[in-house]
Length: 155
Image 1 (cartoon, rainbow, N blue to C red):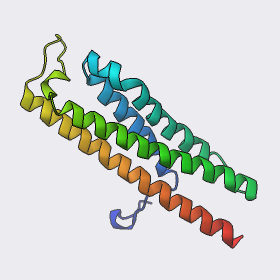
Image 2: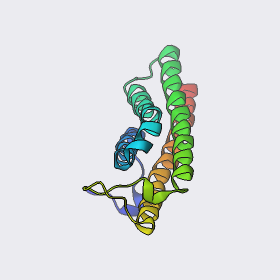
Image 3: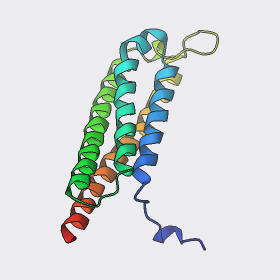
């Protein structure tokens, strides 16, 4: 039986799904950049996105049964949240730098640069989409940390 849209809420595992979407979109963003921008940004930015995904996966796979498992899960969630914040800073720097020369960062399949207006539009759309997911992930992890704390304190 399906649930009315207005009655639906985010699954507790939704933070892992959003982390995966962030990783995929970050990769998609970086591989579309020209080679000179990829060399400057790709490694550290992909590492940050990868760490978000790794720590959310690790946290999701920990079943809280005692203080030790609670602390371990909390540690992974805090790491994931700190990495998602670091990724936000990386993407902000990339976006600001690229906006100084937007047509120089995107090339078509034949190696030609995209026109400035098209490049700005692409950048804005990609930044908005990724920014929304990053904000959502921060909120989901923060809510999960609070929820876990409340559940553990009740035990």
